[in-house]
Image (cartoon, rainbow, N blue to C red):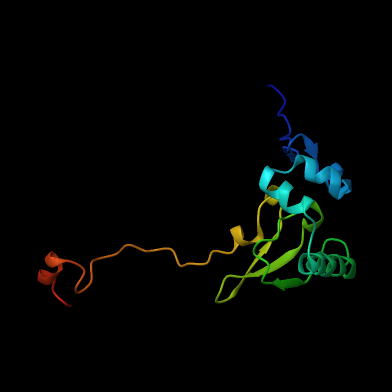
Length: 142
């Protein structure tokens, strides 16, 4: 019988760079590998609010023991670009009504926080209700 091969997990890489090298990158080098919109936003400098968010995320990560998840950080910054330093953090992003929570994963690098906090309730198409169309007049109300 042939020996069973161990399943090898795919290593994460973002544009050819592995996770460890991504985390160690400086902002100037990170900007070079991000897409154009993120590159433009980061090259123009970060304002006070995004810097404060990153500072809070660092603080939450320092407090924890290994193999634990950091505490959730609430934010309204839907237009903040996810950088490698945020990986593993728990973030609550405001969607206009509630804070929706998610954990930042490596695949999210370069995306906006708002992409992971949906602002509308997806439509669930069911039976037509009263007044939906002319044919719905003949649908019994019960």
